[in-house]
Structures are given as C-alpha cells and as structure tokens.
Length: 91
Image 1 (tube, rainbow, N blue to C red):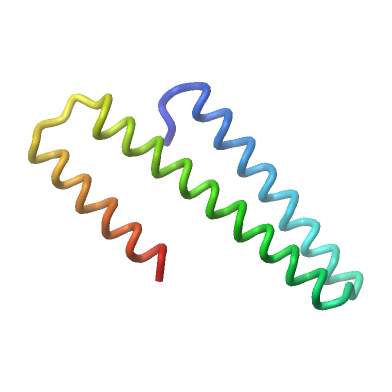
Image 2: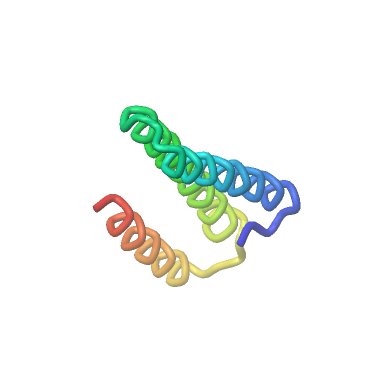
C-alpha cells in the first residue's frame, strides 16, 4: 500500500483508468466489435496494468529500501520477495 497521500492518489487514478478500459473492452465484446478493435483494447489494458505494476514496484522499493528504517537483513529479505514477485509477474 502506498504510504504517502500523493502516491495513493496516483495509484488509485491508474486503477480507475484501468477499470474504464476494462469496461470499454466489455462493451466492445457485447457490441460485437471487430477482433482487431478488441485486441487493441486488450493491449491497452495490459499496458496500463504494466504501468501500474511498475509504479507500485517503485513505490514499494522506495518505501521499504530507501526511506524505510530496516536492517540489512530485512532489506535482503525484501529484495528476495520483490525478486520472486517480479519473476512470477514476468512469466
């Protein structure tokens, strides 16, 4: 969870934008839009989700590793966690 109000607002704005894109995708499917239009919408949703992931990773690393009060061992553990998360995300 983003700790600063600015980060939280920025992330929620991205999520709301993604929700709008998913709703547009649903409407396109219901309306029987051509496949290429649906594929473009899916690509837009994926790009937006990737952007959200990148922003959240940046916020997390900044909060936990740069600004957080953690020991060297805690930072190493958090790096292992984020490494595992990124590997699973990129599969």
